[in-house]
Length: 478
Ligand code: NI
Image (tube, rainbow, N blue to C red; front, side):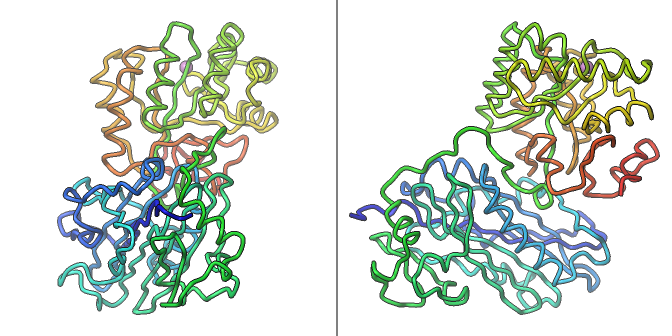
């Protein structure tokens, strides 16, 4: 019955962050223990869809002058919010216990140089092969006895059908913690892995959980038998013989931007029916990226089907006013009309009512803030302006998008220019290569305060990024 073990993977999650001041030149390579990236073999048993979903990240920070050192590699699984949420809780807890915040409220994720990033394949071990100790020293220089060092890692223990079993381990000041999870990727539900077994073993017992060639889970050297598995355990075991099911319909947030360095991708001024809309949607689909489209009400009325296509493809469709006028020049009643008429057009196209507004030209004032609050709109500005509308140049758009993007950025582009659409693949590929996850604005702010009537320029990983005199609203928004 269980003739095929679909996947026993290992996804290294070693998270290391130092909250102290950091000199790039002194950074250490800390990811040598995740398998040899570059020469890693491909394991045919790993469902392609699982490996497609994995985004690997490494945050490498060195400990300096007695400060806490954090060295982290981890993965996010697209479309699996529940697992990523559990993983995040585990990691943040480990960081907190280890004092990684160093007086800060949040740690500062820094995208790892591409050479230091582990690729997805390097996370995956051949079936049956034990995982390398994630908390073992990675080198003499990065030895395991450095005081205050925090190391975090997770593995994919098993993946079959719609299930994935993962393990997260942390070592903080010499103390190890382990958590195991079972995730139903289709339902996006994650539960503790002891639910696989009738006798509910502890996390420590489960630490060496393996699946044998019959896809039967075992732990601590016990002889596992079918009757010792719960219904869930039996389902997971059986699922080794099925295809991994991609989650259909609306994809929930893929990972948490509290942990992963995210960049929001936004397109203004659509929709259009000249083929560009469609082309852009194809590109985003191929790139596995969801974006936020700020659409103009008049155009939505004219092209409702194109509007619906954007939504159906998984993207956010939001409000960019009715006539693309400067809202700061209008009285409250005029602003209301611009917002409400656009909302109506979008809803008439079969798309849910927007919760975000991007004022044309970024022009806003206090009246707009107040009206936006009344109509449940978060005002979304940007901090990376590609000037694509001005240059109409593919290469300039790429350069501008990448030059100043940082964790938490919102990149402004326009879906109505051919050059912008054509620049998109390279922009997304380069962002990913730098360690960023391109996301929607909604995903960028998930888990943070995100209230109607306030203006947002970027997610504040670094307080300074969102608190320049130019952007006082964000800092004032406690
Ligand atoms: Ni515009």
